[in-house]
Length: 278
Length: 312
Image 1 (tube, rainbow over the protein chains, first blue to last red):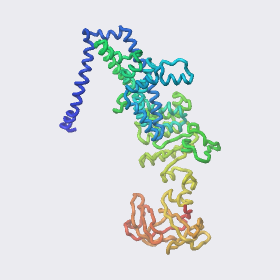
Image 2 (image 1 turned 30 degrees about the vertical axis):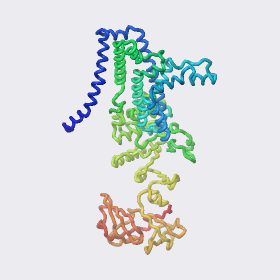
Image 3 (image 1 turned 135 degrees about the horizontal axis):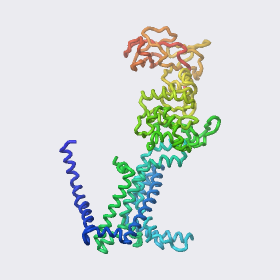
């Protein structure tokens, strides 16, 4: 490439780089800085990770909710994506519309909608009672169940889209070939289709898990203060208890755990390939 | 696709050695299949691809070792067992697909245009190879192709289908030399078609007229139409092309309107007064005429060089 041309390209991305430095990297460094200086310099804040049972509990809740959410979302997303690949064009368009529809609705509205549906006097409980299936209303919100329902609902498109895009690249003739060579329908799926859709599954798992770790609004609303996840506790520390040292420490830990989980996955799979950079 | 079991026939039965397999799904038929584009599994090595049909039949990798190796040796690819399909050339992929389809000793091998993706030279090599493999194994091969030359060169028996019905069935020589219909004559190889009115019949030959030209045809004037016309198929290589009137029973004059040179042969288009445009091929090295457009020449053929066909 021509040298002067290359210089122009650098200038073209300069505003974006500058923006990132000032409004993203700088505050991030500041967060890290506060976490080791407030209220006193040192690793005191990080000691809380080990010493305080409350923080243990919050972390365990966060991990548990994230793992379950990820598992449910990816399995459900796989089923939806698989169906989308195997229906006619008209149905596919409708399904894609429905998947994307949840993207266009405010996360707040969706969380409140779930509260309405799942609360003690909500349509789910009253419906089940009408049918005589239960005597007492079930506790469906203000617990981990409600949080997971809301989160799965939010995350589903994030799982469907990468899996679907991977699946459209699978040559369906390979399945015919497997069947012709003697594989049963299940055998052809487990031996051929599933391994070939693995990149999509991994991409979806990473995407959903990373998103879930730092998720705030849905857990806060559907947990109703009973299920406190890490991001909600960070918000409380920043704005209510004003313990910035603790809040920044937790934010940094969250960041590191995202990076750590990516690094772990990268040991087993080629992430560049999974996300289409190669 | 119906033989393989992927498409259910709308009517009729499919029999394998007298047993009805119409309702059997593909995996229960025990047929080897080589697909158009090979359909090798991209996430498996060559050896694992070949192991696959054994694997789904419950043979462990350890027990399958010898059979996989034999299948690879059969197609001369023993040294590529650990490669992935994407690291192989088209011809090699084709051979792997073949080994995979043969490793479980299938009752029948189905080949769906197996060579259509290969270039001409490689294709010819693999045609020889497939034939010798077929000879050595003795398994029945059903070979689907749209290449008529391939159909002729590869088969012991050809079935020509038209609109789902069998048009004609027989050895390659029979079909080429004695096509029963215009469709078969036109489909296998090239043919000129002469349509004339029967004007006289002897015991083993008859005369027919096209315009002012009277021609002689061996055999009987079969398949006459309502108006007494017959249709005769005349292969382009069965005519002689000459400057002078050749000493054949049938001879007509014409003018070369176009020609192509193929190294081994010339293909001519010759305009005639009564028979219309005819295509004629002639071995290039013995061609006795000057190949140039506008050249007036003679075409001649014997009564048994052409054959009466049904017009359909």
